[in-house]
Image (cartoon, rainbow, N blue to C red; front, side):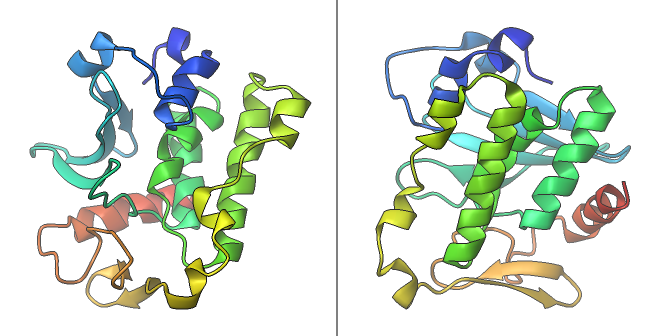
Length: 206
């Protein structure tokens, strides 16, 4: 899934999360994206490129071509494709499949979790901090001083934000609104809802 040299590097995670922006290159990730098999028919693939300027989440159904379902950059991002419950379930499922620690897929997928309120964002950040504690890479002081999400510093952000999770048949959960920044919407006929929902349901049963 991810080379142990990178897994155990705080510098790698700081770069992946854009907390450290320096000159670097990971050519091995350019050649081999981070593949995470979830079920027999579905996999998630994180493509970072060599410099993490554009981080993409791909969905692969067995026997079909990969499909981009989310991306994160510093311009026209559309990263939000996971609910909190799905993030937790997928992280556990992937960790079990690979016999590895849950914090690894958890941190890889955290940026793709859609939040609709300050309380949800705080829960995501606290969960991320708990995953970092599990990793053993960070001291208690570092975790206590962990920076807030940029949105948390803007008191008026939630006054006008327009995004929400809602169930709509036949798609299931969709993330919609002017500020949703998501491809998981009812108006996107290319989103693989049927296979995606089976993957999520199977992961939630673990």
